[in-house]
Image (cartoon, rainbow, N blue to C red):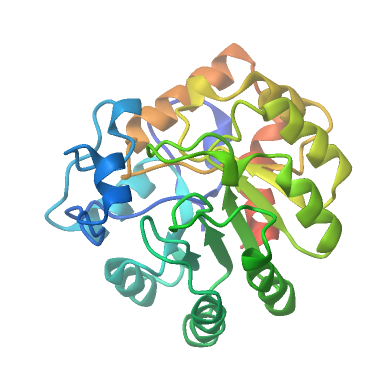
Length: 299
């Protein structure tokens, strides 16, 4: 069921939006700040990329209710949330028509457990009906490059189970080395896993032109707008969305990690008013592409 956004007059807000990166405003935690690599990136702040954002949403007294209320205000029908959060698991169990789950592998500052990650993906898919897996290549110590042998069992498991793969791409926000997320590495992965549906997350900058070239080349490769305020969407991505890439660009927010939905949707209205996104591109961008990638039936 679509939930209409009443903050503007554009007809596009009758679209039942799927947000491929949303969460719950809980107090920060879960990061071992005693690890030297984590201390270096945190520098005494609560958010690993606080220097990139302003007005980071505070913790809420009722995180699930707060997220659902924000979703309803802005026409978000379904949100993809992370099994690392017990709140997300509770929310998905309580509101299965509003949330779908992804398994995340590659925690900041921790060793990468290949066998354990594969077992977790299988277990959570069976238990929770997960729709996707996400990988943070620069997070583990040592990092796990996008095209590394360590990541291949993860990709193979996703192909076997029919799960979409979301992978951080480009220069990371946390102050850790970027090499593991260079966009050129997706080329080899797409070659070796032609059946894998893979989504580049968090911008792919400064290699967005290369990201577009690779999306043209590889049918299974996509791009999510996660972690970007809409006014900062890369021009190459908007041009691709408006031309050949109607089926390749997927909306992802970043609430409450660093952006409010009020800001995101106000700026989306701005993109609509300015004509920077073609009218016929809004439905696949905000809804249709994510539903196909995540296997969500449009009702």
